[in-house]
Length: 307
Image (cartoon, rainbow, N blue to C red):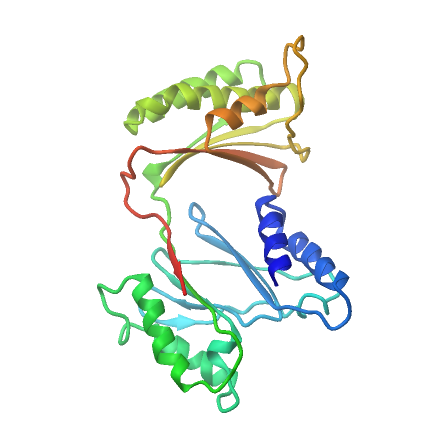
């Protein structure tokens, strides 16, 4: 499980599509030998579109508590556990309302020798509902209460794990999007847009760096990829700058010689931002960067604690 967890984190950082991520995890477990298998559940939430992508390999589905107090288990495609599956893996997509609570858990929390898993899942969903959730209860408190309530009735020696998350979508005023043509003037238009938007957000201290980042990413599309180009700025716990294009070719950092006149763009971006990465989209790819904010002007964006 330690090896699988390390591999899972590494593959997730590569931002592969979920079915590809599970394909590689399945190969890793299968390579350990006969008799090795593991269940797994992975969910990716987009706070802009409020859409979730989910995939499970033999793992019970999450329970979701809507803001109106109703709870449900999303209908996810059934895939065998890792190590016993034959790809491809099926994924599901569904929307989540703002302020929804998700509970992810292992079967040790909801199943034992004297408790059917369906009954245990029902008890978990019940204790997430407003009659049990206090208005001032933090997610840490909620985890503690669920563990205290559900575990004493169990007679299982299986490990139990619980993770609770609350979603909060980005408000429209914290999203700025600009469509650009595949043209040499696109980088200049991107810089002007960054200056205006960050000034409106009172983030003047990040204007120079973000101008540089946007100009470099847009310029790379014009020189090496193909448009149309989309520049998107997201203000949350961090400032995210995204540039999407229609080429599936992923960027890579290369070592430039002392006499080279280019080839250092991604090194520069890595040096001036806290994080950066790239992911495939339905029409190409998206390269993103993150910069920390001196203070979070919006409060907590997505909260999660685990027990």
